[in-house]
Length: 83
Image (cartoon, rainbow, N blue to C red; front, side):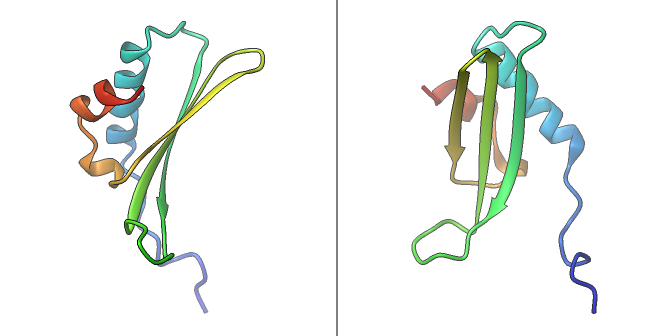
């Protein structure tokens, strides 16, 4: 039984692009941490994929944003629209 083989590999180039857009959008310092994660949702009414973006840019400072689409579909405009 292969419990871990069914998951597609992350598109590291696209994730890096999304991170760069977030860095630019919020004018983050070089040492800020931006994490981009794609999650599957199986709950009723939930989109099948969502992208969660976490920004850690200082002690005690953390922000989290959700986009109701997969990482591959995230655009610069999506990042510009998050508050």
